[in-house]
Image (cartoon, rainbow, N blue to C red):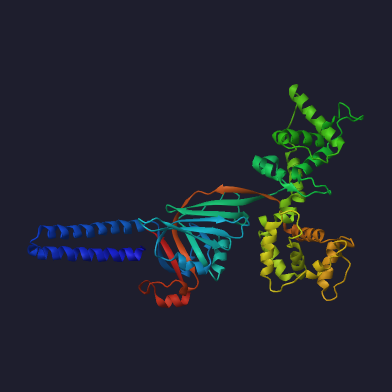
Length: 526
């Protein structure tokens, strides 16, 4: 039973009980049979018991936030000096499902893998009956309103549709964290308070040292899969490129010109090598050397390890942090230059944050709408029947959805059909007179080759897409913080179309409704 039915039932039962008691007192003299008295009293007891259960049920239903109505201007009127807001978009077609029949006791949000949308779970208080939890898709990012810029952004939204949580006090972000650096904001409303678990970025900076990053962050940067510069099937990590650079720059251990005044371990490059191999000693034990490392560098690595053991045993190992900034720079540069996160098609689905605080997938989607060449390239890239692995599937699925939403649709069927049945290769020099964009696409992907297989052409298209957007990417690590819970002041169900949820006629001024649009407001019960 919802709140309205429960309230109505209580009044009915009170009336029924009063009438029954009055009737019994009025006519009990006429009831000569003892069994009749017992029967009537039993009925009265049952009505009273049913009434008591109904009252408890209705009292229980008051827990949580009860829905009221509020015009838009009042709903978004947040005092950013003392309050904060969390706007959770929900499609307008789902708003009637939230309704005002039951109070809301809990709201949780969870971002999807791509960070493009979130799942919103709303728990409804059904009194003594088991609570129900409904899930909704939030198609846009959650907006945390804590300053003038985000408040203005909320005000500019013409089609507000979703939940707006307003807090009694200001949400405090971790020191130094800016709103535009927040990538995710998981929200939980429970027991009258809202808890926020945020993910935010720490952008690479020239002044960073090894101590700028914790062990988990350094481990992530070093173990991130890296693109290969050779044609082997070996799997590389960022660590391999860092190791290669440090070993290449470290002076030869056994050098005929070396003197006691200028040993290798006193050079800057030698100190960097010693600091790196001692700082990441545990990491080195768990990771093998790259398979294609030249023999001279393998020997150099072994000599450095031998020196560290000898120096430790004799108390002569002197390691300082003077080159921590240089080592951090090497790691960051290798990550930005070679990591899959930034340089490989298969990781585009992770939706990296760009330099302009926009997400890479949103940028790809925008450019696909305007750039015919890019749309053709993406149409070719998402062909997956020639793939020998499945690592690109997630990115393919997302880009296919983008292509479905373009105004014009282009086909690369001419290219697919031009495969030579004898060689299995495509002539990259052919001219499509009726489609100059197709000709230009083949020229762009030819890499000065005259022919290649369809599978290779698709791989080149995927690499070209990554190169197209590489300039927008920047290096960072993602961090997480659980903010201090703050008390909820109110939760507003925003709805720019008043006809979706009709308000009670006796609680709203109809003239203000026509002028401003009606919002539904959830107010915590005192």
